[in-house]
Image (tube, rainbow over all chains, first blue to last red; front, side):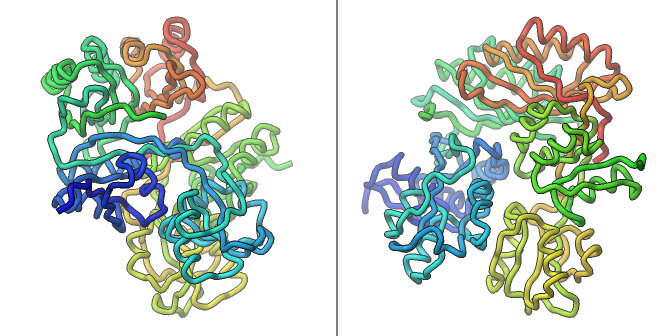
Length: 276
Length: 276
């Protein structure tokens, strides 16, 4: 039995999730490649994997809300966060020029993120792939001429492709925030810097103001807030909140107050602040 | 000179933006079809159009943040909102069966929204199109067999295509919130129900709590809040806020207080609450 961490990710070698797993755990790691976020969460739930890595927030499109639901349903908790700059590279079999490319394939979100660049090359037919890296892998196997992938630099290295155009995403400072998932208690005494919670409260603006005042009094500093309407109960609102704090005891005391005074609290996890 | 409203939208006849324009203005309207949100905003700014319609928020992906920036840069204001349920239909030339389809093309976001359905049909190659409706138009012109579009019902009616599978989006209660843009003052006395604002404040949790308390005291009820970090100034935070209220005078008084006590306020517009 190896003692290496077993990390479940969505995607294949060379994907952005793979890059995050390597950045977080180094090369001494067993990576389990899964087809969906759901399967990643399942693998952590049934202890096939010790950790999971999933994208949670994009600096262009905002939060990936369904992934919060996943954490909840599979009884997992957030044990860390990782900010990865997302740079897209146009890559193809070596020896080709950009003028030779008549077909480009990648994940639909990457097509959107490279829209301005692609508009300059109307001769390139745009195809959707299931993943950025899987297209690079496919090109390295089947060796089609005239076809390019859009993926991260790591995919060009793994699959031996040549980069024809660098950093082709429209927004240059585009980053994605990933979270690490584990099957363990949400509150970890040793990680006392940041927490992700969901609070459901009635009486929206008055209630939220009082709750934030409470958080401020307890020494919690807000780093993110996003409201989502509770569809079945239009008078209730839920808020996804990230907060940073100095001591875990302050955080726990604050959560008890919110639970008793304002509404239902779900703690997704406490963890260290990730570097940007 | 016609007195019909001239409404600029992104896309072509049969698009979801077209549907919103018809729902809002009826059939007695001149619609200007534009290639991008930027061109829609430009058309309203230079008075080629009296109104613009742009998507601003999706119930799955959250806010389309760059479109707020567009309103700001072109000196426009929000004069209304419209919630459209987004239902995707698989459509092709009449007489074909779903088994005949080997290629499906649509907007990348629609591919994502129909991911679970498309997984059941691996024989369908997935192509990205610039728009949902433009693929339907293309099929009606070029009459390819074996090719399907994913678009709204209105596109199948306009382009004479047959629906092979109905409501194929993964999330059945998916809706998109659109806003109407006009070139006029942001505060309209006659529209006294709702407003969209952006506030930039320092001292995140303490400042936000006090500002929301102020809003509550002034009778404003929050319907949406989303934080966005101000990239150049990491200690400052900006919030997109939608609020509902009873009287425009209360709203104006509250905005003056926020501006003097908390930070910079940008008012995007005041308008009537849209039906869901």
